[in-house]
Amino acid sequence: GESVGLHLPTLSVQEGDNSIINCAYSNSASDYFIWYKQESGKGPQFIIDIRSNMDKRQGQRVTVLLNKTVKHLSLQIAATQPGDSAVYFCAEIGGGYNKLIFGAGTRLAVHP
Amino acid sequence: EPEVTQTPSHQVTQMGQEVILRCVPISNHLYFYWYRQILGQKVEFLVSFYNNEISEKSEIFDDQFSVERPDGSNFTLKIRSTKLEDSAMYFCASTSGGVDEQFFGPGTRLTVL
Image (cartoon, each protein chain N blue to C red):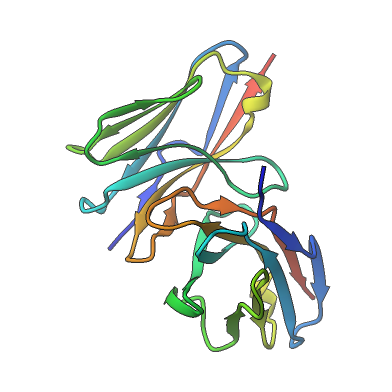
């Protein structure tokens, strides 16, 4: 069946370092992936997406990498800031009406 | 910037009572969703709604749940007889279509006692 999961439940980094959050997915037919950021008490906030015909996509300070061979997705955050502290979810589009299938989440803690 | 809004922010109810969670999606969006998140767990899909009808629902969305778009702006989730295990954050989301970004509301925290 479909599933999206994360390798690391928590990640602690120093301010200014780069962060890498990983995600594995099992549905090889998935063609669209999204990273969401969730701050405490708030709803998920879109960060960046990638389609299966791409290997890499860059945004402002964030990069998503997709490895379809091993069904692996990662989010790289450059020069991590305290405001990046949150839970990060990968999500996969599944179904004809584009429901999101979320992974378990990784908590990113940024220390000064 | 347009945003999805939800009311109330926190709802406390007794087991067996009915609750209605309200959402105002972004005005030109056509696809609407409800998700829930039990404390400390991942976000789970409940239901999608398009063209005034349910387009897809999960196993969680049993006959105790219903959704409605009573007018051109509101989108509601009703739980007819709440159970303790319904306690969770409920998020509404909307999108203009296709695989466009889904915009999430701030959520309603439902506590069933």
